[in-house]
Length: 69
View 1 (tube, rainbow, N blue to C red):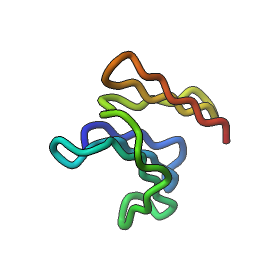
View 2 (cartoon, one colour):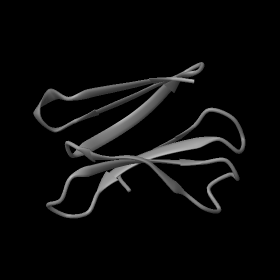
View 3 (cartoon, helix red, strand yellow):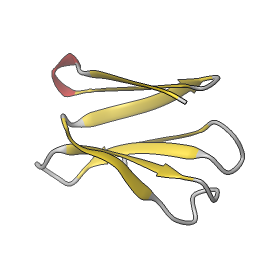
C-alpha cells in the first residue's frame, strides 16, 4: 500500500499496486485490522485523500479516481 486515509476512526481507504501490475483500491470498516478490495484494474495509484465523504485518489498517467460515500 502506498497511501492510506481514514474518514472516521474505523472507516479507511488505501491505494497501492502489486509491483508492475494494475493499481488497486482497498477499504476497511474495522480500523485497518482487515482490508477488502474495492476496485482493481486501475492505473498505478500513488495517493489517496478525503474531504468529508469524498474520496480522491491520484496516480500514474494523471488518473484521478473519485468516490462519493
